[in-house]
Every structure is written in C-alpha cells, then in structure tokens.
Image (cartoon, rainbow, N blue to C red; front, side):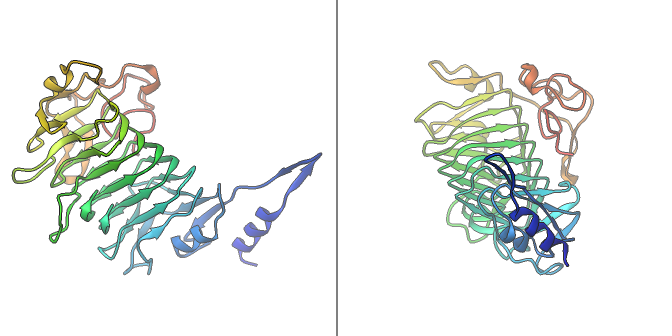
Length: 330
C-alpha cells in the first residue's frame, strides 16, 4: 500500500475521548509521496502541510503546470529557499491563491513567473496568512505586481523575503511595482526589495500596513521608480526603521509627492512615518544575489529596538533586511 493511502486513512480517523473528536493534520511530502506539487495540494485538507523537498520544479524538469493553485488552509513549505525552486519558465504565474485562510507560504524560491497580475504570487481574499523566508526572482507582470499582487486581504504577514530583479513584461500596459497591495491590511518586516525596474513597494486603494526593518535597494529604471509609494490615503501606515539606497526617483512617493527619507520622517500631522534613513547597506554582493551585510553596514542593529524584533541568531537588536529579525531567510 502506498504511503499516501495510509496517510489518508489516518486523517479520516477520529479518536473519541468523552465527546471530543481529535483529528490529525497531515504532512504530505513532495516528491516522495506525490510527484506533482499540485496533486499534493489537491489531496490536502484544511490544516494540512505540503512539504517540498530540495529540487527544481518546472515544466521542463518535472512536468509541473503553472500557476500552482493553492487551497484554502493548506500550508506550502519548502525545505529552504536556497534549494527549493519553483520555476514557472514564463508559462504562467508561480502561485495563485484566492480565498486563502490560515495559509502559509514558506521557504521557496519563486522564479520566472509571468502573469497579468502577480507574476510570483497572486493573492486575493486572504486572511491570517504568512509569507516568510522566500525568494522572488525574475518574475514578470503585464499590469500590476511583477513579484507579488495582493487585494482585499487581512492580516497577511510578510517576513524575511527577498524580492530581486522582478520586472514588467515587454508588452506591459502599465508599470508594475515589484510588490503591489490593494485594499488590504498587512505587516511587512525584514524584507529586501531590490533591482526591480519600477517602484519597490506600492500601496493603493485602502492598503494599510506596518512596514519596518526593510531595505529598498536599487529599484527603478530609466526615469521611473521609487523605493516605496503610498497612494493609499484612507488610513496611515506605520513606516519606520527602513533603509533606502539608489532608488531611481528617490526613497518615497507619498500622495503623489517625492520625499527623501528625512522629509518623510518630518511630515507633520498624525502620520506614523519615522526613523527611516538613506545610505549604502553594504551588501556582500547584491549583483550575485548575496544580501548579507558587511561589517560596518548602517543596517546592522538599526531596526526597531523593541526586543520582540531582536535577531533570532544572536539576540541583538534587529538587523535590517532578510537576514535580520526573528526568522532569518536561511
């Protein structure tokens, strides 16, 4: 009997203690129990985890079809983003999720996705979802969100993700940001958005978040591209302890006006923008994809001083970027 039949049988059992039924959440392994990622997701139930082993999963190598459609409540977890690659080879977006509750996307490299919106991930109507320890590289969009597009979602948490080299399609009708968020509430901690050909992070139409301990590096091309654009004026986002460097049009665009980090920090009123700054983060080798910080980087110990944000590796004050904070990339 194949192991996945046994897993299915175990999951269907309930152990009765008094009037209480106890059900098992399963871990479904790819490629050992399921060859295709989509088959494992389709088989899974709410609360199950699809765990992906090291390897490259693509149309040419494994026959995987893209986009891969996520299922409500099913967690997708790679062994590590440095060895698990979902490569759509420009045949579609990488991941597509609608009505995604209590979900997780962890430990993956998402590469060469191509979609109208959200070349790496298309996420809509998500609630209580975690996006952590992923790498988004060389994804493209026709309209919005070359790496990530999100709309109408609540309590979506981005932690320790690297967005590098995501760009518009040559036939794009608009100029997509690397990460584009609409009408959602979210948090965005210890991410790096680098080397996209437009804005790094763009907030629109009621998007409200807490954005801390991130690095916005070398975004834009030609005469286009800010590090962070906030066109969503319905409620203020908290934007603090972020580092900006070499973004084509500047660090911020707020309500249509370009601002340096100092100017953004000095805005009057009830805004929650403070302690942002500009300077070279001194990456080891950004061109080669190494976003570790060299000794002497201004991004070391420069994050939110609240101990809740301390680095998980040594317990010191938060280093900005993907290798700082509670859950470093790898």
